[in-house]
Image 1 (tube, rainbow, N blue to C red):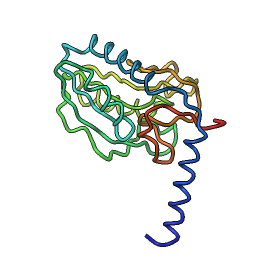
Image 2 (cartoon, one colour):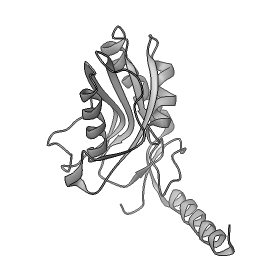
Image 3 (tube, helix red, strand yellow):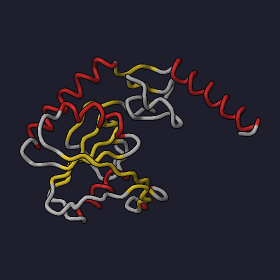
Length: 193
């Protein structure tokens, strides 16, 4: 790493620390645990006898998966995928696959885990892809449903949701600020966002 790169990284770390120190904590770790218990109960009621395949979307869904999967006390299979979207909103279904789904999806009940439903273009495209691969049913579970009217489809809602939060820049519990703070135990909103 060159001296200039080290300086840039140090500046970024200073910014990231300052952002966390000044952020508003919207959801405490205890409130998140309660939301996860409620989500797990709803998922169990719907999928306990469905032999589901659960896909985690990387990297955002990692924390949710680690917290929700142990709460699901029934047989299930776990996998992950990693996709980002090309271009802007009008090209919502063009995915850049970093890791594609590898399981045989024909006739399977699939649950997709992600950190947040913001506008939802990537999540929608992933779910459409899984349906085209032959999944019998594709559901989604997100920790946070951000409240606004800019969804990929009007009225788009997750099948399972932990928290409905305001339209602010959020980080923590899988959501990041410039690649950092996915590990924060609570959910924070950027100051003045």
